[in-house]
Length: 399
Image (cartoon, rainbow, N blue to C red; front, side):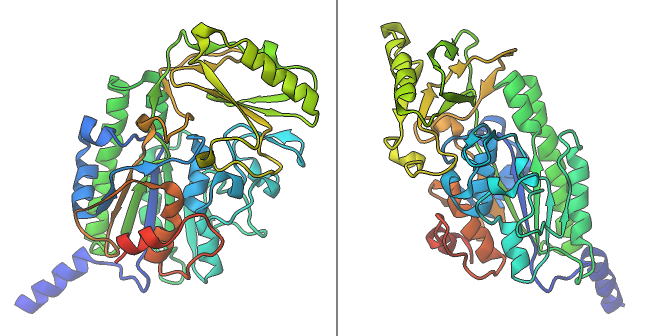
């Protein structure tokens, strides 16, 4: 009788077994590291206690959504994966980038994302939204993916991830990603300590609680779960709007990324005229509004001092709380994009739980280019060569 009851309990609690331990990567866009202590999201705190977490995940420059998500998933700096900003110009394509343009022209992306690397090693990948996940690499996308729809409910996304895990062995992806924008939306629109941001964090944390419980019940916890964010947030002052259009002369193309202006020109004289105008119009009272940098003398940690089709000739870098004016500008509460090395409000999160990770382990802050080596080791893949991330941190994190 005891044996029958034990077998019944076993069947009810673990209906699926895995030949390969799956890894689920979830990104919470705009979730600042400080939100953990500030808002005490109970599910994330529990996962930190159950697994390995970083004191901070450090964004690459600029601290924008697309370059950072691509650095996380390729292990490369923006100069090497191609998406150097949310807004930039590509000289050969002769076009300004719009979010997700890779699906229409693969030249925008110059590195392989992990879902492709995983498939090339004989596995299946599934992507429920990730920047540039609709871009075919060598005419191939992930085995399963959804075209991006911003307002798809978070619960629907998590339910589909569970459904992928329930697939038969021959059809099941061993690597799954999911992306959530609700915290970023609330942070931009309403700002820190607003009821809307607190509610967005609470709602997603509650959904994650149900998701984690389902993994424990259905799969006996035999799923590796990694949760990251791309950047934090910092406040904008509605009076700190920089007018700049009068500094652009003929022959200079300016791409406005809100926290940066990227300047492009084949004419050195015209470019220098624009740069001089930015410098000369910088009065003593405006010293903190922005700084002017010219290629190849960008700060070393920006990792942009190599000539490519997308690296600008000059960058006008707004100081935090300032943004560059644009047509029909509606100033929101907070933003990101500034130099994250200098402004730690922009620190992001890294939390990893499951069979591949130690319990209640804290590690020092690290750049997000090192996430891919961690994921590939946890997936049991062959180490990826020719990336900027290295496997030293992975060796400390993955069992």
